[in-house]
Structure formats: structure tokens, C-alpha cells
Amino acid sequence: MRVLVEARGVTKHFPLGRGKIVHAVDDLSLTIAAREIVGLVGESGSGKSTFGKALVGLHDKTAGEVYLEGERLPQRYTAADFQRYARRMQMIFQDPYSSLNPRMTVGEIVGEGLRLHAGTSGARAREAVAGWLERVGLESGYAGRYPHELSGGQRQRVGIARALILEPTFVVCDEPISALDVSVQAQIVRLLGELKESLGLTLLFIAHDLSMVRYVSDRMAVMYLGSLVEVGSADDVYFRPWHPYTKVLVASNPEPDPRSERQRATIPITGEIPSAINIGVGCRFATRCPDVMDVCRTATPGLRTLTDGGSTRQVACHLYESPGQSSPAPPAPSP
Image 1 (cartoon, rainbow, N blue to C red):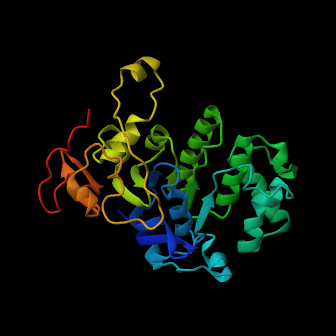
Image 2: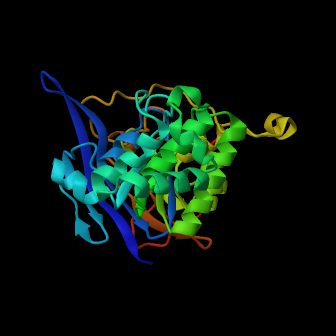
Image 3: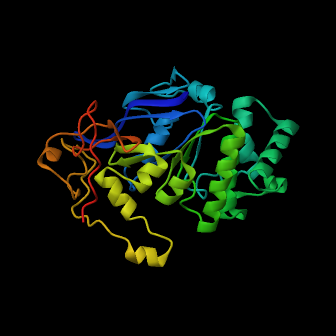
């Protein structure tokens, strides 16, 4: 397995003044192999988008390092750095309504990267734009339209074409389907899968919908309040979650079949989400965890690599033994 992107202890804090700090991302480490799709899930405010933006340089990192194909990326990007890395890393943004310049035509939006980073303009640029519009399912004639003339799904296709026209190797997809209708979501996910196969793309796919993430991803990483709590194959994490938070997250994901939904066991959860400002010691999920122990309130668990029943994954939870020891079967969900 060739590692394409590696995050080592990436941290992003936002100072508020008077000694207060928002811990958006704390000491997060994750590797993404070439041609792999890693799904990043978690509640709103867990730091998913902040982490994705830190990977591609849109947020300066407070601490930690990011490597692309073994090359250490800058802590703080300059204009020259964006020029250097834009052809290798791109981002598809969440909101297709606000991420496109309303004063530019579709052709100008999609072709802007070619002009800025590849020096391509004129007929060659127009030909490339037309080709990419058709590749994402839009007619070349859309190049003369403005964003307000397009539907949400069409706008997101424009955003995908804009990100991929430079043929990057790594793309962060920041909830690219959350603002779209369900039928359009399926179309966009299929399109991303087809482009991943044809272009050999490596993707970090950020989303709320666990079932969609399981469908599109090779591995799934679960994030809670700025930290990873579980990482493993998408099927393992979705069907056999180990961390208490992952179990709650999976149990809250609705079933499409009403009969299955009525018969499904639920996991009750109480308590409040801690503030991301000046977080103290202990597990961040301790205030809501149905399996909380005394140690959870005094010691912060680290990610541990565990193997059980043929499944290997990383889990940050005091319910599991230390690395290097045989792992018992994960505890069953609390009733």
C-alpha cells in the first residue's frame, strides 16, 4: 500500500481572546493510501471540514504535519505554495450555491484553474472546459450560463469539474451532497466513483450520511469534538462498530425500510456535548457515553490498533486493552 497523504498530529485552534481557544482539531493523525476513498463522519461541529481544509492549506495548522507523497507540506501557505500544490490537491466545497462566483460564467469558473495554475487560455482552455463539462454530465453549452441559471445538482457538477480540471491526485470532498436532493445525491456519488476509477483519484469524503459514506468509501474514520475515535474498513465500522460513540452514531442513522426502522434497537444517550473551548482532560465523549467509567473522566484515550475476529481497526476508548495485547471481543451496545 502506497501512502499518498499522511497527517501527523494535525492541530487547528482558533483563538477567541482572553485566553480562550476553540479546539477545532486536536492531534489528529490519519493516512490515506493512493486510489483510496476515506470517509470522514461525525456530528456537525466535530471538526471534519476544518481538518479537510488544513490538509489542502486553506487553514494554517496550529501544529502537526501533512505529507503528500512523502513531501512535507508548508505549515502556512503562501501564494507561491498555492500555485505549486493546486495541481496536486483540490477541494470540492459543501454549498454549491455559495462556492461559485455569481459574476462569472460556468466556463470562466471551470477554466479559472487552468488560467492561474497551468497558463492555459484561449481555444485550448475552452476545449478543456467543454470536455470536462461533458465528463461531469453537463452539455458544453452550459459554459455560457451563470450559476443562478443552474439547479443545485448542476452547480455541484460545475464545482467537481472546477476541482478536477487540473487533474489532481488528491481531492477533499467537503460534504458535496448534503445540500442536494436525495436523487441528485446518488447521481453525484456515482459520478465521483466513476471519476475516481478513471482518473485514479484519492479522496477524503466528508459527510453526515453514514450509509452513503459506507457505500462510497474504502475506509471510514469517525470524528468527535476534534479527535478521531475509530478508524477501520467502511463495512466493519458501519456494521460492527466498537467505540461507544460510533455505536450511537450508527444507531441514529435511519433505516429506509419503515418496518426495519420500527424493529431496530436504539441506544439511549443523555448529557451535553462539551464546549470546544478550553477542553480539559479525559475522554471527550465521557459526558454522553452509556459505557463511561471513572478513568474516562481523568485520562484521555489514544488511538489503539486492535484486532479481533479478523477485523483490524484503530479505537480510542478505555474499554479496550493496550496495544500489543490480544483484544477481547468488543463490548455489546448498551441496552
